[in-house]
Length: 256
Image 1: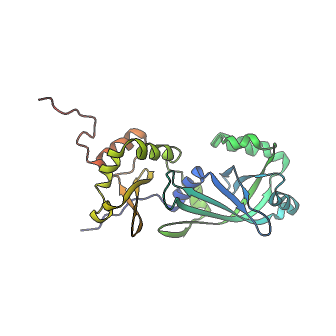
Image 2: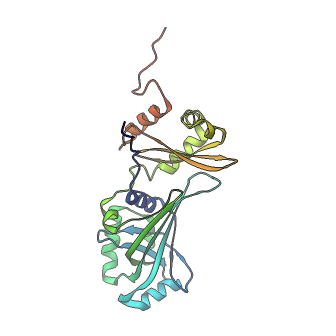
């Protein structure tokens, strides 16, 4: 028999989802203090728009460098939404050159970003925050499985996971309010892993990820759906199938 291939998000999809979720983003350059970036948005041309505090040393250096820009790395940290022993799910490093956005182009770029994703951080542009471009040279993502590179073209053709913006709230809801669902999912794990503390780690269109915290370390396990899902009703059905629910389609038990 041919072994079944486990469908998972592509590397590019994982990066796009991390970009959409990451609140802890930072731009790093040599010889200056790192600067947080409330806004980090992939543009159609393959560069990233980032916002920096106008008076930060990094912003001052980038402005002084003109069109040559300065070398920098955008670091994105994808944190688990629950208080786990190891909360970092993945790290993304986007290396390139940081350049100013010309004054005449700032409004147009901000409007374009707002049309695609109305980030509240856009309201601070011109009021303590300034737009810069990061011309991408390389992208690397690392997680518990290792590190991989991804090309800019792959990023541009990929999309964030359809549930990434709601994932954190859903996982917290599952952990806090539905221990019975979590217990049913944990029952699908190999027997040795059921002795650890099982927490929800991730959710995407391909399945659910669980973190098992035990005395011999942490273990991440993916429970795949039978097929990728793309909307909330399909997601609910897929989770009920994982749980082993006999009423997957909303059928009622027969009254005796």
